[in-house]
Amino acid sequence: MNANDSLPRVVVGVDGSQPSRAALRWAVRHAAMLGGVVDAVGAWEPPSHFGWSAPVVDATFDQELAERKFADELGEVLGTDCPVQVRRTMVMGDASDVLLDAAKGAELLVVGSHGRGGFTRALLGSVSTRCAQHATCPVVIVRAQ
Image 1 (cartoon, helix red, strand yellow):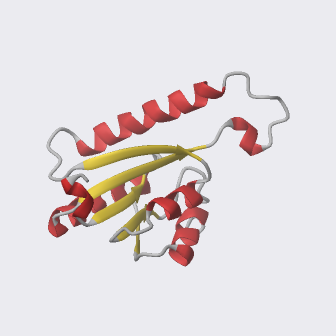
Image 2 (cartoon, one colour; image 1 turned 60 degrees about the vertical axis):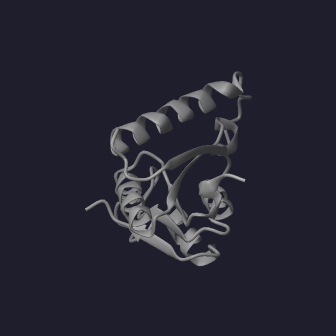
């Protein structure tokens, strides 16, 4: 058993959007106040999940690209002086399903108000709305401003 397994967990969804970046910064500050750890979680879906008619030729290409972008974003937002441990997880699947699963047993789930596919006139994105409705822990929805 890892010593960090008993620390409070703050799960945060990471997708490259400005609200996601703000949520990541918020999650790190909150975890530092709690003396906890952050589980930064990203989700990716291969093109075939979006209804493309052509088969996926190289299924690893999208995963590799998604993982590289995920790592780059975490590095840009967190820098080298992060006050808490940030564990990184990239999972294939629907973002809301992945986050709801990751948040089981967590102290808190933090998501951005809109993700990559958010409509600018909508008050909340579909992932943040679904997480707020179905999470088994409290949910904080962070705006980019």
